[in-house]
Structures are given as C-alpha cells and as structure tokens.
Length: 280
Image (tube, helix red, strand yellow):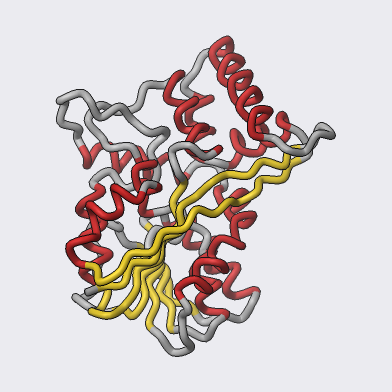
C-alpha cells in the first residue's frame, strides 16, 4: 500500500516488485496507521459526496486501510466491500464499523489482483491507498476491470507539491527509494490519471483539495508519525541516531514552511487531488 517515498524514475534498473510489495506489507503492518488514518475521515466523506453515490449501490474500497471511505459509503446506505492486503488495518476498520453498527464486508486482497469478477461494482474507491502500489498500471487496470460500464472510480491522492508529497521527498533524501519504481505522487497529477484511465473513461474530473493536519507542535506531529505511521517509523528505524536527528530537523523545517498557525501549533494544509472517473 505504500512506499517510503517518491522515487527517481530516470534509472533503467528493473525493480523486484514482488519483493517491494512484501516490504510494503511489513511497513504498513508496523506502528498503528489507524491513529493517523482516523484524522483523515473527512476526505472519505467528501469523496463520497463528489461521487454522488446512491443508497443501494455496490461499492468497493481498495487499499481501504482503517476504512475511512468504506465507512463514509456505508453511512450512505451502500453495499460496501472493504479490501486491503494488511489484515491488521482491516481489523481496525472492522472495529470502527462495529462501533457504528454499519454493515461492511471485509476481505484481504491485493489491489493489483482483486478477487472479484469484471464489472462487479457501481463505485470503486481509494483514499491515499492504491496510489502506493508498486505496479501502477496494473492497479489502475484492476480498478477499471471491477467497475461496471457507466460506474465511477473515486480517488484521493496526495500531490507531489503538497505537504505529504514533500514529506516523501524529504524521506527520500535520507533513504534513497528503490530504483525504477514510479513515484506514488504521480497519482496526484492529472497527466498520470489521464494516462492510466483516459482510454476507458467517458469523463475524468479532477479537483485540487486540501486536508489540514492539526497537531500541538511540529515535534508532536513528528512523534505521532514516527510512532504510528509505518513509512516514517521504518525510515527513522533504518537510520543511525545522527541521521535520525537530521531527518527530524528537515521535517520540522518543512512543517514550518507549510504551517499557517502562527502560535506554535501545527495547522498545515496538505494538497491532494480528488478524482472522479466515469467508466466508459
């Protein structure tokens, strides 16, 4: 579901995608992403509104994590299936659904090989999930395959220029990412979306939106993310103490560049691209 950072795709090395995927699963199983993920709930709600989903529609949430988009769709009386390839994340989503008495089916699944028949769903969703698959074209093909003609694919993806896109870039300065793998932040560009989905879409709508991170201080943001957010937890764990300090200092500087609080707290808007693809 996630790489540690966007990568330089200028090299010609052929990556071992299976090995990379295995490392990704380990990364996302570390920490407790739900602590961070629940703060992003508003993104799933907004995406469902932009999709104008209807009660009774069959909805698939791909790389669902702790279930933000799944919960939003279930609240709108849809027939929802939530998938992820990390069982621990699905367990967190299942807990949330039970607490709200929402009916959601949960199934472990790889976004690059979805275990569903063609044209099985009216709506296919992914919020900050499928964008991190190693084989982007294969994942996009799976989203298209399981969506019925006339159905919609809704995505929320961090942009390269936004705060989180720049966090990945900062991590990449300290830990060079795998060679030959396309940057996940490309999913946050209209050009890449058109490239992957355009031939099979009757319409593609893209809108720049912002999610606002709110924390007590830059240090608080770093402490939460390096404790609970797998990619940052693994990044700090792979560095020697001096290099950890350098990474933390770079992240503080980045937070301060985006921060609009002015009072020591963190109020950091992070741009993401909201995409609605209508399947041809």
